[in-house]
Length: 371
Image (tube, rainbow, N blue to C red; front, side, top):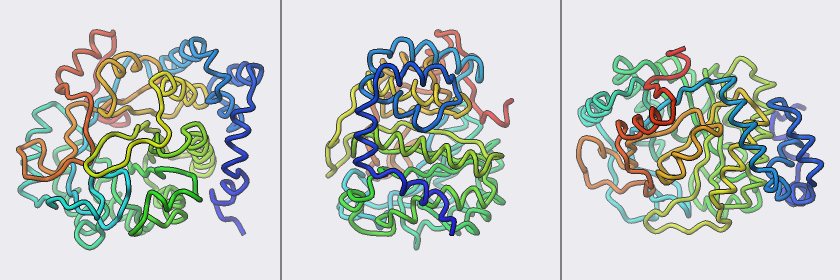
């Protein structure tokens, strides 16, 4: 019986993956660098290994060349609209966690349209809708209603919400959703429940199978990622790359993106168990680009202005700007707690000016609609 990605995942025990990555040599790294965008998951192991740190300058140059070849000198800007901070999960790293005693808020139609008015004034022509995971109050019916409400204002709508069934995704795609982001958080199954202690999100396997339900639903683009800092970033990133490789072969008409969320401070939440340095994040960005020259890669306002200025030429294709991580945060404070603290608080115009100053063109709408 074919169990999809789960069968692939089971071939790579966590401890063995960590050992193999740490055992990679300079020769393994040099071999992986010859693949130039068409590597294997084993090549990715070499590119994220400690040995590859000695080749970081070479990796950066190659990553920049591959990105220019595939995407040119353009940088997509995006922005999240938080619909709700209601959540039934207890997650140790998230400000929306059910056990945090905070004011909960779900935006109604009027409040959403006030947010849309501000976001449109920034110049955005596409939007990312985000919410906590509370099926009873912010479920498929609510998402469909909100997507249909705002779809006339944007060329495309992206979604980052709880995992849904294939039929539910089909409803949302019919309503106007083009991209769905679904992050595994960590691929370390044995430790997954330590971070996801209550709620539907505690089901590791259901979350793991979500991208396949999306592929079967016919979504245009799937976004993957791991929360960097929970577990060994090298291993979690390997499994993300393995997942990407499987999905591209299985659903070859679908586009894919990868994000790099590093664990950020939030009220009542843990600090990173496995901190990741800026240099290591640069290595990871370059590793993904060398491994797959077609994957889109995004970097959020979790990162500092100086870091984002530095890395946009090294492989990133989309960058958020002006983000608020609390419901109602654009039109005015509605006493809702933010999900995490942002680091880059520059306005969209300021980030666009920075992009122009580096010889790139800011793009305010989705790749597929614009090109």
